[in-house]
Amino acid sequence: MRVRGNPRAQVVRIGARLDAGTSAGVRERVHKALDSGEGDLILDLSKLEMIDATGLGVLVGAHRRALSVQRRLVLRGVPPRIMRILAVTRLNRVLHVEVHEAAVA
Image (cartoon, rainbow, N blue to C red; front, side, top):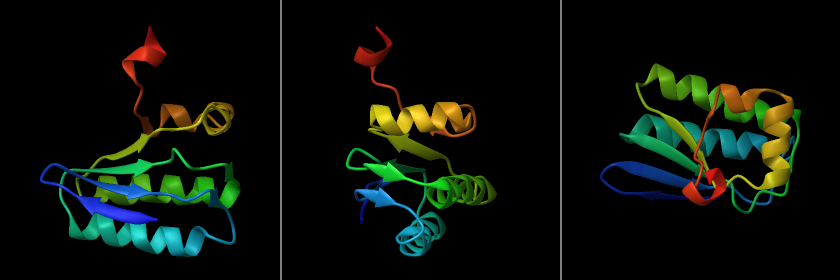
């Protein structure tokens, strides 16, 4: 995971797995990014291949923390497989998922 900042937003790249084994480190880094920056925090999930319930909990917790510091959490580059999981759990209605114009058309 890498954090990259710019004047309007920060981008955090998530690796291939967001599960019980990786969630503690990801949670810590995302919380630090939320607490130290301004504007949107974008989680780049384009490399994410696997997520479990613990990983979903990290996303929900990050969303809540973002709201508490008056920021917005945005999920970018969500792979179709992960998007299906968000849809089944209805988290796609709670979390802000960036949708490319080509995907909408």
